[in-house]
Length: 423
Image (tube, rainbow, N blue to C red; front, side, top):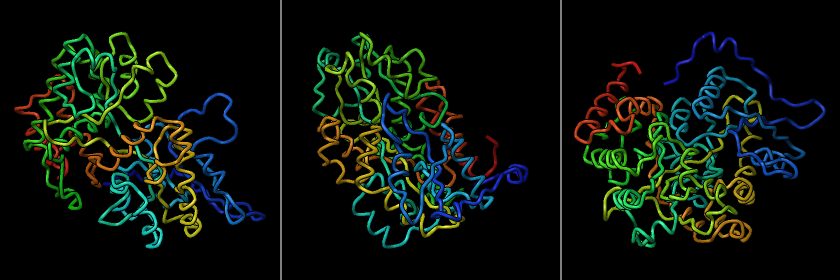
């Protein structure tokens, strides 16, 4: 699960986070990159701004920036934690890291009073991504989800009633019939597995279940839900609605085609709204719940975000746990959402007047509903293995075969989990 070379550990510099003797202790918070602040933004932005606001006369919070890539974030944090690096106090963690870190005892347990305080205040999808073995092990800071973005004029020409749930079949056929495209994330990276997972969850299945069994988890991608997912991918890949760069598409590449004269559809995260706000297509931009894999079955939107974990090796874990309360407070979640368009994990934040002034009320309601009813990626300590094994059989999208790909990938994932094949 965690394989790190002795050389990598030996070369790691361990810096004490004890702060200056003349001042309060310093808590070092390793953060993932935030979006760039707007020109002329006053003061600290994003998570750095939260750190500044949460510093007080008992401790200060200083941020250290992790790499852009989630994979590199995971590697850097694991190296430091396995080496028992005392310089880390707090960590911004992708939900898919939680199971691996918690199973390896690399997260300081949240006190019962803090967990009890956070659980009823947090949306269910965000809670699921911070939980391991039925226990909340990190504090959700912000939550992310995907919705279906579309051009209203295109949907009208296609005769689609977007006030009602739509299926992948419907939007692919509508785009193809009108010279438009459907934007997805299908490069050979985790974003493609996010799409595959959402399709399978939306068909009532899972890639794997019984994930607490580790390498003995049940691999279910070969069941009927996997076939349903493969049929959607095959349909888009073989359709004129597929964008030319489908096999290397990501969250950024799909933004442009939606804004083109042809318009179309796109699934993407909450940040997409700010990309079009104030632009020429704003009035023609629509949003709806994530498309259904199977007609009559509710879709399972992807869920992401960031949780704040506490290192068990920091010198001031008691202060770090106290800082978690401030960092993930309702006020900081609202401010962070307004600044970055990364949505709050707390339910009450969606009623905030300033947030509703920044974003359309119906879009906020859609994001909140989607987060609360999302289809999380399986919480497995071996998620990185599952991702790589899935990609090896499902990429590129135009080679996906519903009659063979799901079953082939099930066998390969099981072999990878058992250590019978190398990735």
